[in-house]
Image: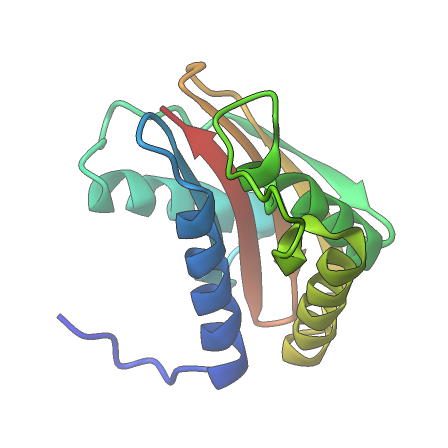
Length: 169
C-alpha cells in the first residue's frame, strides 16, 4: 500500500544518493546500506526509535529475531560527525585491505582526496538545507556480530531523521 505522506524532495534526493553510494560499495560477498529514514515523533525519542526498529524487523522478515537494545549519546557538532562518518564509509570501494576497485592511471575522481572533499561538501550542504535538528544522538546498537553499523538520530520538533551506515555479510 502506498504511503499517503507527502514526499520531501530534499530528503528523497539524499535517500537516493545514499542508496546509490551503497551499491557502489557492495561486493559479491558483503553488502553496504546507507539510509536516511524519517520517523514520526509523536512519542519520546527512545520510544520512537524502538518502534522504528520493530517496524524494520517486520518489513525485513526478521520479526522476533532482532534485538532492540541501544543507547543514546548526545552529539554536539552534528555536521562534523556526519562528514567524518561518510568519509569513513563511502569510500570503502578503494580500501586496499579488502576487495577493492583499482585505478592504475589515477583518473577516477573519487580516488582523489580533493574530489572526495567536494562530494562530501555537496552532501553536507544538501543535508543542512533539508533539515535543522534541535538535537542529535549517536545510536549505539547491540548486534549479533553479522553487521557493523553506525547510526545517528537527528531530532527535529516533529520528526526524527535516522541515519544509518552499515556493512553486513
